[in-house]
Length: 565
Image 1 (cartoon, one colour):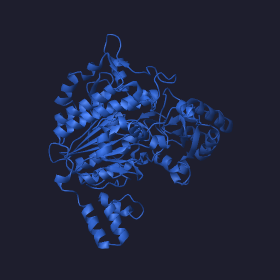
Image 2: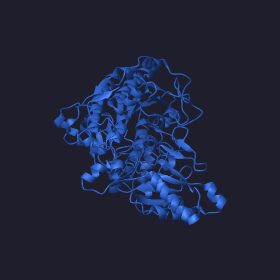
Image 3: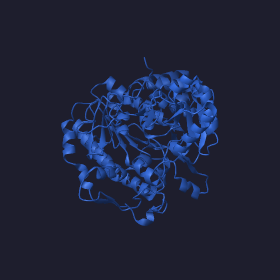
Image 4: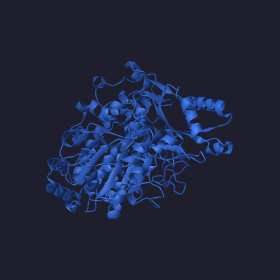
């Protein structure tokens, strides 16, 4: 039998402050009898009347914690400020794995497990035997409903190796519903888990669709939403700054030479006389796709009757535009600054509707992010810091040349696989070359690359032999023995791999790991700022406690140190 969340808390209480303050106080005073009573009370699932009727779980893709506070004085009264002023928020919340990318983060949030358990080591990787590319949520057996499906489209959680809080909740009470919505397939499919239902924005049509993994056809409320063609209202509109020009003095001006095309506001949405793929895709890099996602969430609230009975439900919403905007222009840009303010106003409106439809004391809201964001190299250099870009292609070419000198001419390396480098294992076996020797030789070649930091081999990661060395623990949490390659790499501080983006993420450095964890639910949470370090894996066991269900089986998190009201 899987232990209840509080039993896990008791197991770690002597090693960490991640436990209820009342229990810690009892143990420190040696009041054994009182501590036992506290444990018994904690381990007992809450009465049905005390459980949230609805969990509204919001993930803002690519939102670093530094941005939440940078514009606090410009927030609306009841958007993000609802969490900061009247909810509980953690100033020191982080991911603990090294390769901080969208799929890995979304797989962690509601499972309480890092990639070394979830198997979602990146957005994509290579099959370690064949070298064939693998997309994190691809599943050839499932297709999009009413939409064309390409070979590497995300259609199911087949590659997710663990369960979510929603899976546990639905096993405890099949009446509970888990609905996940996102502008990206992975942002919906991974939080939905194995037994929830995912809906994603379709750039080919401007509508939302699920896949045949979940159902044969869409329910009536989805068809009605899509029939209304809600994306079309944005055609030939403009994304205009919300505030006066002077309000953006703390962010970078528009039209930086290193921005992607279109790096200025106002920004036109749609051009020409036809509504098509180009227009629908453009919406992904604007506030419009988040507005559409929240509109679809409103339709789901009504269509599925979420939060309307005594079976708790989960509505997971991943808002994707911020990541697209930060990649194109960086988190320090005016576009990113304004987008956060636009999103803040959207959330204020959405929360008001939740208060009316579900009741302020009936739902719990949690907001986090799947990763932070590295400042653009140009921004860091302007601050007087050493920063740069490492070319992935050139790195592989240099590695190939170095290995050829040592082992003879051959294509020894199949390529990057998430954050690891994958050797051609079949070729190594044919030539009788020990993979450990190959890995050591490869590390020696890569050690001179200026943009690479720590590099560890499969043997070291599998044997856990370099504990305490820089980023080893974080890299090990990003490495799955059945999925990952042979040499795990980390970029140097303030460096990024070269690509088409102005800025990116994917490192174990603080700017990529430091994300918000914000909670609101006056019935369950006492407001306040909490400075103790916590991790995103702590969210899942905390939610399990509130729902009165066991933690997900693979969870490695601990109860968030919250104080009950």
